[in-house]
Image (cartoon, rainbow over all chains, first blue to last red; front, side):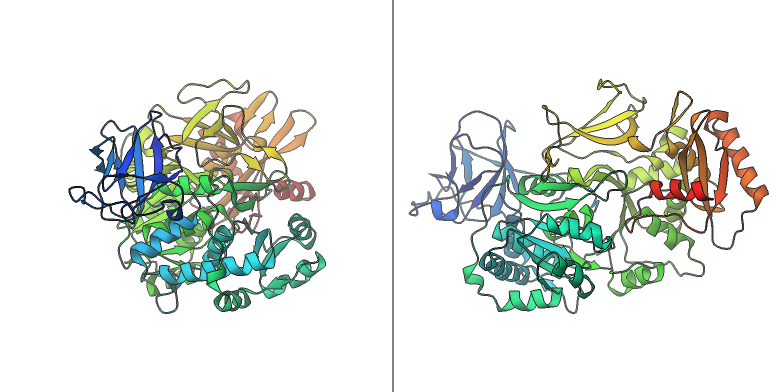
Length: 103
Length: 500
């Protein structure tokens, strides 16, 4: 898939929902719990797929995840139990440098 | 992507935390989501295409904001202090609106053929509505979330259309989710028709910080609420901080306060220096932004304030008058009159680009150029380290002879004087020079400015700047005409000066 920033990705194995913050152009497959995520609303995810027991590290609400090359950045807007991976490689948690509250 | 997503995250992440109102009576994030759903059902059922909000700030404001977002219609917060004619004109732009208004506004709304609910009545109807009937929030991030009318200090008010994409981009780019402590609380003192009220509602909710509202500002009321509600973060406009610092006999201790943000107009150096000294435990944040940029685009942070305060290097000290550096996702260019970028330290017009920048004025078309750049119509310069210095509106520039003079530079010199509480410099039409420079100052409480004192002030400007930037006349008034959000009404100054 090549979703646009602002698109929502829904898991087919658990409750995980991700917001695409950055997508660096190239086509890639995003999986959660081993099964492909789909673009759209939770109701678009269709029937639940079987999760890969080896990919159950979980997703954390409000955390940012990034591909190793930094080309893709995803924000978790609903937490789940699966591991998110891009083309088979698990994404890593991105720590943000917070700005001071300005308003 | 709809701002409703931010509320869903808050309700999922910390649903039991009070996020709007006092510790005693406020709404939790979970309750706010229920009320937003009820409100969306009410709005959708009424067939309204927008929600007009003409009331003071309070916990009903976030309910209205998120209910409108979920229903897929824009929230239009309107300045309830506008005159009847202007108000009717703005209301007329939204003939199919659901209206929430304080009781005093009913006449203007009925004259426009609409019915109004008070905030309390709206809340009662929302609580009684069937939340199950709430529509799913539209996914279209390009839909309008909020329309805010500019204050119209230099031209007729324009409706700035802020899309869901603009607002969420601002929040996600500048705030870390759930980063606030359990007992953090923010105090909001600006009215709901100010962009800071909208952005503040979203960023505080997303960070998990309770928002308390001060309906009408006085220095004493502000201090009382900070202490009583153990406020940790507050946002003020410069005139408010000046009044807090200058109020005689006021006990200004605010032990709970950790962060104070300010913006919306120029901050006199004397006031910020006094506040830094008086509140050594507080982190100060200067934010610069416009309605059109979904609030903040540059920030001068707490460490930068303290570093400037301590420094003996003039360039570093000068940063206390700077608006700071660009936030992530924002590009800034200073351009000359022909639209070409200028170098560090050179003054020009400030242009800005980024996801959070609105691209449209409601009913008036695009507000950006083909490359997405927005002309702020603010004058400024950027130093070699990326610090932005604002020199006022381009439209306020005085042209004396062939020389362009920024009033801000002269006002800054006047405001360094301990006896001066407020100052404005304007260009008055002049047969010989095109425009001549005149200044109006306001004395600090207890100080009387006689003719000698005003002449001394004039000589002080001459020795600091130079002859061509020295006001031809300085007069003293009891106060300057400002909007409730602290912006100077230069037009009113000019017309009153003509009659003096």
